[in-house]
Image: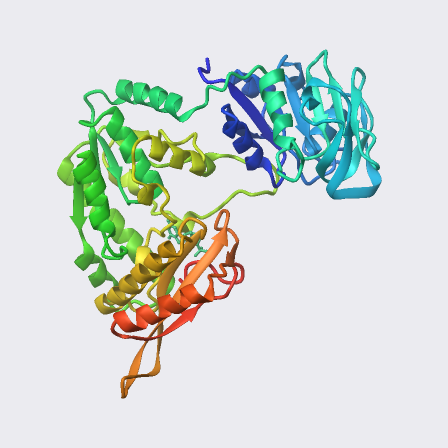
Length: 511
Ligand code: XMP
């Protein structure tokens, strides 16, 4: 069955669901996040060494509350319920859950008994609570093993069946030794060996890819972004002769971007890399277009056409490689964090290329794991730690009509901004930062003469998943240098503006 030891994380829609799955992986154990509607049979198919039930926003005893297949408790696999996961366990196994008189939200002092699950917790410590409902009567065979001022059963255990529950959140750092508690569950109770390492992953994938791709051709659209770059490096390590990469230069790239991709993949790795030089074609298609959605559509369609033409020249390929990663395919629980960004994807590639199957070797990895893999495969830091860059490139950073001259301005200004951010040591602390070109021209004075030039907009944000973002407070002296350099070094610019809007109401990109 499953060669990797797996912990199945069953998601009830809590805000920390993905975090739990990632914490387990950070401990060296592979985890799968599945929605609470999963059947016991499906869970068994993972051959798991343990099961974790996440928190969730609803009541365990409400009519519309998310229920769980009770067979999951009969699989003979250790179960740890967290918050809602503890309540639903108590409810389904014959205990009682009720609304508490007072809720507990935030850090609370918790008193712990001696128990293998709590071995690292000491006698008491702060735990992070977020609940109003609580377990008021335990199911048969369970005992309480921790308590707070307002919660009699802050943790419960049935050692005979190896079923446990904690009302608090061990996965958040505010819970003292919370990660140690998870470690005790995963290693001491479930018997994990810690086989989820990047070197194991590489060995496993390389062996599988060699078997699948032996003597065959696989085509990859390389964008220079983190996922496609790491994918290229992995495929190259497994089957260098099978891999053909196509890089579309749409003329909307940042300064030096094409050269960097050609240097790393073409020269250092020696990948079979085809660069489609399509800048002129994109610019022509975009001539006179000002409406943002129309621009995006033109860029997306032209991209597909160019890629298709290159693929046709190659002829039939056996496989198309895609940089799908775990968050792209994970199903989630109730009314929660499902991220929908379909407008962001350059869709339609698979239907225009003649191929037999898809290869998606990154499909089990979270983003930080993709980065670790990139380092393990020897990719340079500037590619592995690259900030997100939109598919339509500078096309969504030049407001209004896109012209070659405007692209030159935004490219140069962006390069200066990046250079100064790196000099200030902020390049890995700011989630995303870039220069955009407003369509505004204003009056300025240079030497003794009047100018009537463009205004560059600097945008920098802190974010976790791009769904929300906060404008980043770059120190004034850094902004000062950036502004002076841009107005001195980039002709056609006489004003630099700093965007201080959060998302929402703004988006990260300007179009
Ligand atoms: P917005 O502007 O919607 O961007 O706040 C959120 C994140 O997504 C990136 N982005 C894109 N990525 N194709 C992509 O691959 C796109 O069309 C696209 N538009 C925005 C953006 O850079 C930010 O990180």
